[in-house]
Image 1 (tube, helix red, strand yellow):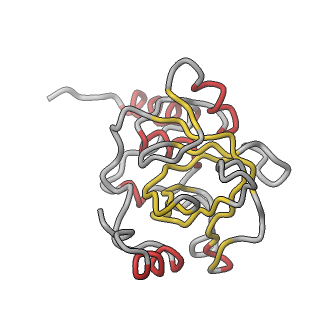
Image 2: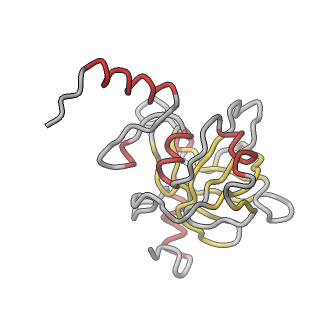
Length: 187
């Protein structure tokens, strides 16, 4: 057995914190932290830096587009409300204007931000049905939030996504979709 000095463990933890590495956990949904390391861990897409920078960083490294696919990372633009942007992973495509995502650091849970949320409803409100403007389920209001967020597009990974990307317990809107849209709840 190799003995690792405590200083090496402390240094590794400090480096991980500095670069936003997602902590290893038994279940991805136990994660608490920022959206970027969560999206990286959930999607397998290895991009670093603020969420709003992912779209340009993906150019030439990953395929990009404006059609949602399971496992793709959706990149929210930087705005006054989202100063660092936001990234999330598509967990289900329900129909041409509705999908679900799994992400971290959006809604508050137990009064704090940072928690992972699975199968959260996202609705395309863009005029051209191109996913350039969306509304997102917000747990604090138990509904689609009132804000509309601009989106850069989707980054498509290699298909190496986390097994917890989707589940059987979507948000309330997702549960209604599963109940009333034929085939929507299939995994």
